[in-house]
Length: 277
Image (cartoon, rainbow, N blue to C red; front, side, top):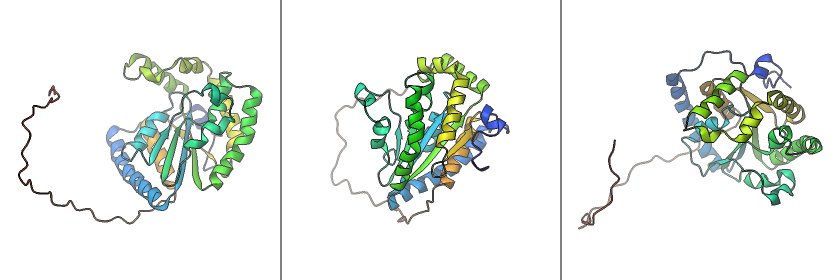
């Protein structure tokens, strides 16, 4: 595992520790606006070249996966940047080959797929919470590098990110969800059960890195105690690891509007929304 990836070997990664002061909103919004321009360029490049990009987001509960994905998709087309967040498997899906239900969601030409959790559920929550056996988890860890090799060989650019949050910050975020009615939907019974098993998740994460951090599909760890800094770092890294370029673009000029040619606004009364603000 090389120094650039720094997956899990430093004390800071293990604890999710940050080394910088928190980024203020003004700095964050200025840099995010610049990155949004680059993400639009990436989108246009993907459509123009038929590139296929798949990005996997994993991490502990409260690590900031959803917020990071929202930051990425805020200014791009949902038809190109497709977010995949699968529900629990159906009874039929439980009988399939494990990764089978994820494969239809891989990107086609000109698409960028963002997995908000992925096939790595088997290495994390399913293993820790007893939804699969140890043998099933070990079989998954042994086989998934082969699946990812096949995905890459099919022409997909695959990037895998693990967002690492520290214990204190995770506690603060989950407690915030309890007391903020805008965020209560983010707190499931499974989150509460998982919260008490910090070190079981740490062991599962370590095993996952050991088995699936490969040269062709490495894991990249993002310290996420500072959400704003984490989002900017991840987006910058994502852009740096995709060989996109600005593509030819015609200059846009608004055409003249047609003349009214006798059109009159209808006298039919319309139901306007009350202006309360």
